[in-house]
Image 1 (cartoon, rainbow, N blue to C red):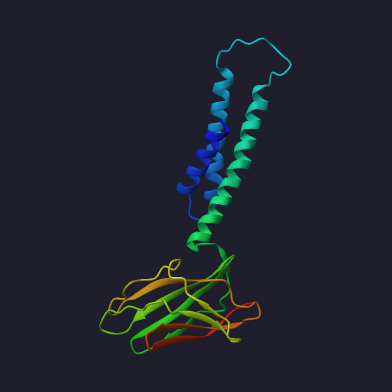
Image 2: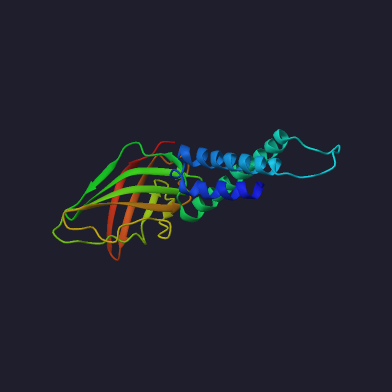
Length: 210
């Protein structure tokens, strides 16, 4: 019975609210609770003949034991699954360290840093790219770095980033660049640098909270 509850708990978790949402934590235990109660009651109500003994357990105690196992095991399994998923994808929750958005205008594009989030393992930067030209273009992030004043540099992890393939002419796109690790705790200012071949585009003056 506990196994059924754990499976229901895990499945419900992934189909409830988004990552970190309240429903993501409340819905699964609720469903597991109902399932556990129904299973326990059906099991207790099923006609059985057995000789009374000193080890008979009341229905209430049986239900409490089942729900206790479902609750503890379900939350542990959910937390473990979310931890692994967040580490593999880079989509971990964290704290915003950006003091205020910073924009760098250019003749062809304007790049705005809108958010800098420090998670447990990563630095995640939300960027808005506006195409000021009459042609679509692509900005690769393979060589993109996030650098502190002391020279400490983080390199973009393209596999964990979510970046648009093309920016339409006259249009704009949001993108997320994920870097493994963090800048030093003392860093209160940083530079985001895009590099493609011999061309570089730098967004400086990114102020960070400590």
